[in-house]
Each structure stands twice: as structure tokens, then as C-alpha cells.
Amino acid sequence: MNTDLYENARWLIGAIARGLNARQGEGIRLVLERMAEQSLGEADFRQPEPSTLPVLRHLPQCIGEVMLIEPDLAAAIAAIEDDLQWRQSSSYTDELLGEGFTANYGWSEIIGPRGFFPGDDFLLGVLMLGPGHHYRDHYHPAPELYWPLTSGSLWSRGGEAFEEKRPGATIWHPPMILHATKTIDTPLLTVWSWTRDTMIPAKLA
Image (cartoon, rainbow, N blue to C red):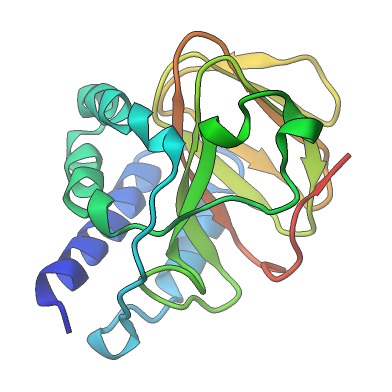
């Protein structure tokens, strides 16, 4: 076992838990409760096959911004960034989501089937969206929490108007509700979590 990587993965999960615990908002308690139920021991740890995506060109800028609001979390992400497995949803194409979307989008699991710990019907990860892109309305059975760590992201829930969320705010999506995200001039880095029904993928509306 790679002990340093195990400790860094635990550090990242702990930094997320501490950051969420310092906040108030819909869904936070549920995410923290589900995080506490996960098995994160040495016997549960596995090392994913690292992979990169074009959107990672924005990661240094994002980590620099996160340093201003959550320095421990920023350092934990930086410590493990080369070991993350970055992925995209296969159904999300430029044809459906606009030219350049796939070069500006990606997510990585920290807890989950492709993460450092398998998870028990629970996912925790990070997502990136480059500037000037629209992750349009989609839905899924899983209740979902987003915790955007960078500025300039716009969020819509239930078909309502987009609203800018400050770095460190949280956004909760109940099951099957339509939701969407836009970026304008800056890239987005956000923590995300699905608390149950994690095997059913999102569908574009």
C-alpha cells in the first residue's frame, strides 16, 4: 500500500468534512452523516489508475483561489492531484452541450467505485468546468450537494433563473430536480456528493 497516498486521501476527505461542518445549509448534515458511515481504513484503500483531462489546465488557477478561503483543502487537493482519476460522462458531448464542452469538463471520485475508497452507495468527489460553458439542465435520483470553491459560477434549480454563488456557498439538489450550472469568465472547481442511489447516472433534460 502507498502509505503517503492513503494519508493524503484521508487528509482530503477530512478537509472536506471540516469545511462542510463549518457551514450551514440544506443537505450538509446528511452528507456529513453519510461520510461518517463510510469505511476509510487501510484495508478499504485502493489506488486508482490516474488519468487527466484537458480541463485540468485550469486546476492551478483554481487551487490558488481556493487557498484564499480554504487553505487546508487547497493544500490537500494539491497533494493528491496527480493521483486522481479524472473522467467524463460518456453521454455528454459537444454536440449536446456546445463546442468545447468536453475540453472544459471533468470529475473525479474521492469516495466511490473509481475513488480511493469504494463507498457504500455514496459518492464524494470534485468537478471542474472551464470558463464560458453551460452544464445544462439534468437530473438524477441521487440527492446531491455542491460546494463551489471558486468564484463566478451561476446555478439554477428547478428551472428557476440562474443565481451567482459565492465561493464556499453550498447548493443542494433533491432527487430528480432539474439543475444546471454556468461559468462566465473563470473556471469552476467544486466539491460534490451523492448520498444514495448512486448507480443511476444523470440524464440531460
